[in-house]
Image 1 (cartoon, rainbow, N blue to C red):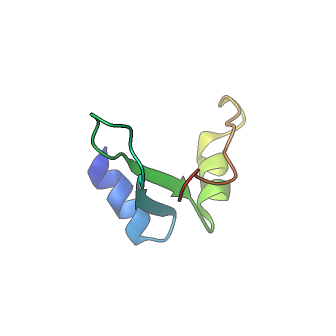
Image 2: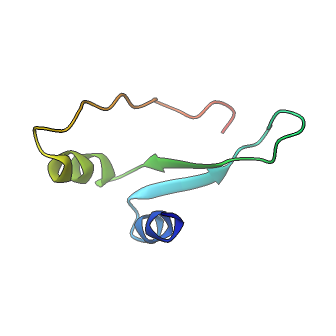
Image 3: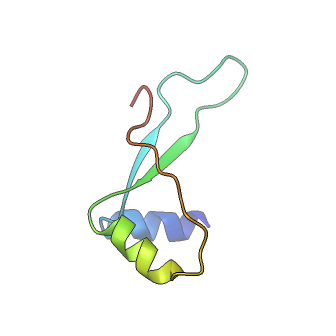
Length: 62
């Protein structure tokens, strides 16, 4: 899965960032967000039978 995410990021379809303030006792998470043409491409590839996706407008703390 991670190689696919990195390829999408290399093509400008995803932004990636490390979590800036993880809770104590847990390593930081690597966060991903669709950007540019990413949301439209994802909707097109999912087709009408896919479940609706609720996207957050921004990452908290990023």
